[in-house]
Image (cartoon, rainbow, N blue to C red; front, side):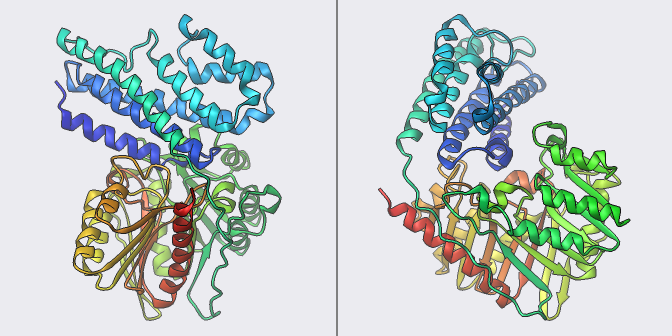
Amino acid sequence: MPTNDELARRAQQAVESILADVRLRSHLGEDEARVLLSWGQVEIEKAAYLALGLSTTEGALAAFDEALARIRATMREVNDLIGERDNLTDAQLRQRLAAVLFPRGEPPPLLIDQVDDLISRLQQLSNLEVVAYLTLLSTTSLRGGHPLPSRVGPRASPADNRSRLYALSTALIGCLVLVVVLAQIWARVPPAASTPTPLPPSKWYQAYFTDPHLPDDPSRHKGGMDQKLVDLINGATMSVDMAAYQLDLDNVIDALLQAQKRNCLVRVVTDADTLNDPKSNRGLRRLQAAGVPVVGGNSEGIMHNKFVIVDGRLVLTGSWDFTEDDTYRNNSSALLIQHPALARNYTLTFEKMWKDKQFGTGRQSTNLTPKLNIKGSAVENYFTPEDRVADRIIARLRAARKSIDFMTYAFTDDNIGDAMRARAKAGVRVRGVFEATGSDTRFSEYPRMKADKLDVWPDGNPYLMSHQVLILDSTTVILGSFPFTRNAQEANDENLLMVDDKDLAAQYTSEFERVYQEAKEAARQP
């Protein structure tokens, strides 16, 4: 019989995965996303509890995985419906609502009236109202006549009774959670524009920061970080290797195709789910149709890397996803470095994924050069899961003497959080900004840090704050795709840089101060 610890661990990993998966909320504002993610967390914990009643560990885990797949599918359908609702006919809306609410067939009789009412009023409802309504109905429709998770193996009678009672109680709790979330929604102050600090031409790196203008205006979606990437690709003479968690920027795809026409070797690695999902791989299909080889991988976590290698000497990496949302609506950053030895590290890891199909825990350690000296600056370069990245971050945190500043999209790793709290108790100034969505969950480090009176805040961008950055003692910058989660450490494909350079730290500190002040200003609003 499965243990509480086994299923609790699986549930935490599942919650971390939905918090970190931007594709589940790409069309949602922050308020809608908070409702959807709260619903997902409730359903995941409910599924884990129900699985305890199954007689074998194998059956329980299989049932939980089945339930998680349905929960993620529902979240994705809600997200996509919000993104496309204005362009759908009534007949198409009915079809899409059926996909959200009744993935297994016809609606239960008790829900037909509610669904008809929703369809008749859909055009008059705000996105937030639609998401709240859909999640509440989804909680009922997933239950109505269809056990969640499905049975695998015999169930003992006492466990069956306990599960039924739990299902009823948690369904009510789920509704209450959503009501509470809706009650806590507050107006946000649009963040001011960000202007990257110019660098001397002699520098071996260039930092880039997104520049969101809010309220969002699609007519201004030009000339941002995507153009920097286009320029980088246009300068390629031999090769472009791209590891992209997501890719929907048409100008970047055009640049890759033009590079191929110039006889550059162009290769792309992406996440398996991204590649297999027809709604999110249109750009990848364009590349494949033109003969660009695209490989998807990582069935246990996510291929979360976002890096580009050009001509074996230039590397662009960071938290920035190659999407329109992350370029023009979200707070994010990337770092371009020119150094052949660093490019070799990324190329060897890329080859493991692209050529050898080794992702996540299936990838073997490669003969890399993790510690480099680039023009007098110490640079360390690591990849997960093979390099135990969280341990290296903790070692750096323990060495901090004056200050720790951080911006984080996802932060659920207790060990990293404990290391920060320990330094704060030792007199080190600790400040942080969390992406607001998901920061109030029980897995997040935000409530614990706030309870310890650390200077931490939910962000002020109504879209995403997708930075994943640490700045230590105004000297060291730790950056990359790596979120501070157990999944990132143990299952995902991620990369990390630790750069000891005061000028670079000053640039990231400037970005931190902007995001930090916006977060504090948002918190002061009624």
